[in-house]
Amino acid sequence: MANSRESGRLKDASQKRVLDEASRRRRARKALEALEQDNFHDDPHADLVMSKKVPKFQETLDNRGGRKKKARSAEYYKQRFRKTFAQLVEEDRNYNPDPPNYMSAQAMPSKLPERHFCAVCGFPSNYTCIPCGARYCSIRCLGTHLDTRCLKWTA
Image 1 (cartoon, one colour):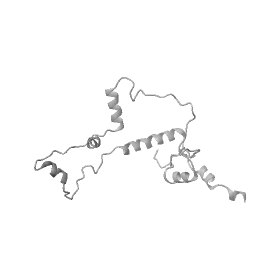
Image 2 (image 1 turned 30 degrees about the horizontal axis):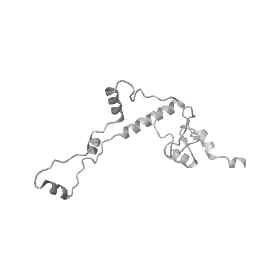
Image 3 (image 1 turned 90 degrees about the vertical axis):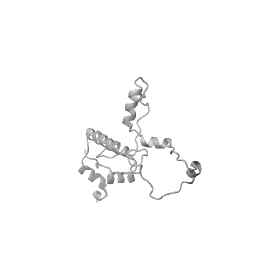
Image 4 (image 1 turned 180 degrees about the horizontal axis):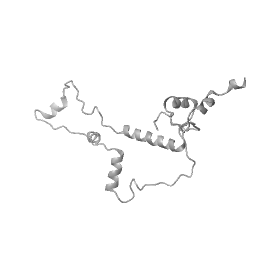
């Protein structure tokens, strides 16, 4: 009768595989690389042209028959010539070789203990997933983690 009150989660934990620290770091690095790949893409709708002809009332009043060159905003050039983080760091290294620059910036180690945040919601967390080492803050976040994230990355 005492065994009927056991936690099902504890029994299942012994059957799951547990990753060592090197595997966890390798998974984290691969996850960051995948995020970096997803991070920068050209907007597929940037060159989309509306099919409907919309009358341009302001332009016809200003021109009075002459062709006016379209003024492009700064936002247009920001979108057109956007750079990845790696390109910005390389550019900073080439144009500003002397410190202080991005590559030479350092901060002293904190005197406070390290803070841990939930991998699901981002709130402070007190608990660690046994198989993968990810942090979670509540039973609800643990459920989300186990359903969608835990050991889902390929090693």
